Image 1 (cartoon, one colour):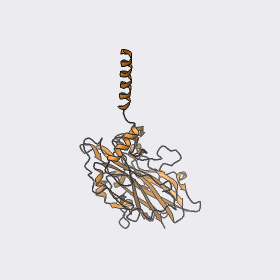
Image 2 (cartoon, one colour; image 1 turned 90 degrees about the vertical axis):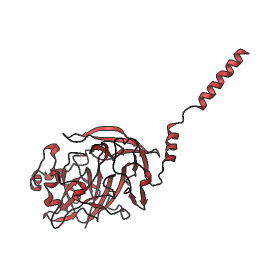
Image 3 (cartoon, one colour; image 1 turned 30 degrees about the vertical axis):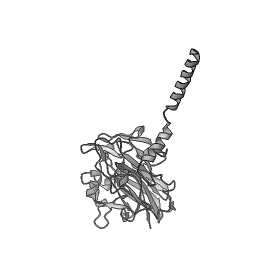
Length: 338
């Protein structure tokens, strides 16, 4: 009898332990997704990403440049701050207009161009004309012409640099660029700055394209298209909204803070053919323009040394981004030069 009671007791303990077994991670993710007050089209992540690659570029006095990965509540994995071609040797680097990280502190565009190797002119059309693009991006860009990779930024984060891209093409041609505002705190769009451990950094890109006669044929302005694909930090998901293809975060707090480990981020998948000439961007928002003062370039020689180009008296280029230059961290822009 005693043995029978002991056996029954053991069986009851086993059943009890089994019933109290923790739920799987997938169920926890699903449960957390149900509780997140968000009804938009993005995937949602919360907290800091896992660093998967450290120091893809190093610069004295520059910020640490890492790449991370984070899983959203719907189970998708996201590279942060973006999936880029920085380490792809087949994607060409741009030439330096100004790059203090590598001692290319050129005072004028003429000086910078004197160091350009014409072997690096990217050919789209063999019988085309040579065009020169002058670019300042905060922080990183990848540029395509008619779907062909023509140049990527040498400095993904800081210090601030500016670039030259030369390509040979026939008009009309379509420029497509991936723009990334890099981040120190991967997954939440933040960096240590202005007395805060989690400060929301800002973006911005300006470009001028000239023909072989040194005539400006295109500048960045409100006629470009711009769409965001990664927005962070978001403290309260109720602040974001969508109207068709417009993804708004204008009502969101941009103050950051000392602890951003609970901040949210929104991610949208980028179309695989977004850089191609025949990609339909008709429903994308027009680019939002920003002043030099808003972007904060008046103390950056990578910009101020070349105001004769970027701030031409008759054809002044404007900084562009999506609708939120602070919170939107990965932005695709497009423009057709006719």
